[in-house]
Amino acid sequence: MSTLSVIMIVKNEAAMLGECLRGVADIADEVVVGDTGSTDDTAAIAKSFGARVHTVPWENDFARARNRTIELAWGRWLLHLDADEVVDPENAARIREIVDTDTESDAVEVTLANYCNDVRAWRWVASPPGSPYSRHFSGYLPVGLLRLFRNRHGIEYREAVHENITASVRELGGVIRSSSILIHHYGYECGEARRLEKAHFYLDLARRKVAASPEDVKSLHDLAEAALACGETGEAELACRRALGADPAHVGAATALANICLNRGDLDEARALLMSLERAGHTEPHIQTALGATALHRGALDEAERRLRDVCRAHPPAPVAALYLSRVLDYGGDGAGALTVLRDLSARMPALEEAGRRIRALEARQSGEEAYTRGEARAALRCFVAALQEDREDALAHNGAGVALHALGQCAQARDAFMRALQLAPTFSEARQNLEVC
Image 1 (spheres, rainbow, N blue to C red):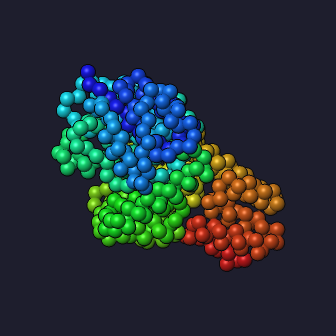
Image 2: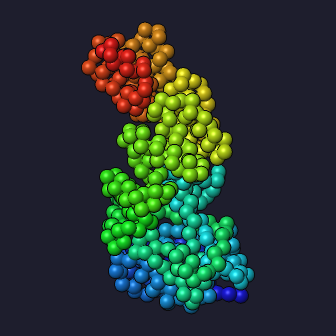
């Protein structure tokens, strides 16, 4: 049988480290922890699980710190884990089987499940129903990473942030094996303040990496993603444009820039970027979903419906595509169809709060429309306001509120409502007509 060393670098991870180490207690022959400056009980917890704890100087370079743990490990195989990651028993058994039986591979790709509720992130997938490892999250972002690899083969980490061994393995001509191993990552459980602190820390490292390699496309794309995580949209856009200047076919940079353009209403550039990817043969669901969203905002409802239905059929439950599809049907006059899509999505993904909010919003708006038809403008307005409290992006609810406000003689507020409707749906002819009447 071969031997496995779990290697980690940590700093102030007392809250999560114990669960991480319990997950590998039965498969690890040793655990090597590089502590980069903890002031809590991290070291004591690690030692309680039998780990060897070494002080590793922090030099603003994750790769350098991880390479130090490689030097300290004696196992024939190495498994890189972070303190906020958990290996469940089934995946632990898969790891141990590879360690004990694989005689050909040099590195193994695993899937890191980054749990979050960000359904609009293009890689997001729903968690299996009833999974105890999804906790309070509705899904995760899957990322393929080389985390299990042979020791003493010259493999090393590269890059100060988003460090990885991929380049090293390929330069050595190593054999890379894919696997079904899933590692659960709970980086979003640290709270909003801690999340922002970490996001800005990574942004600083990403800036340093670009300063050192200003033409490196991966570094520029990493900077764009880090900047977006901190709300620095302008910096993210500049990084995307620089990356695309060096590699016009870079899917990540083009997708990120298209979403930036879409969010600010620059539909022509968003569509041009996405169409260039489609012409290059990229039919990934997130690209088709974004093209559907762009068509929706341009008022091309038939194209939007076609693209979004294709995604929903091929990749159920496809939450983002389903949310956009419901909007397309709603704006096209098929409120019942929109509700059906939302209810099906909610049934498939009960933890998806946006689907529930959109259902309540649509039902409230329909009640408002019925009240207005009965001549009850004030009751109608209450319904439209309730709808908007659930869904601020519903142009039909803004328009309905404007109609009710106008009937009540509140013309200035009605104009504001119609203008908000047009901001959300620039081709919404009824809202434009109502604004002209005001």
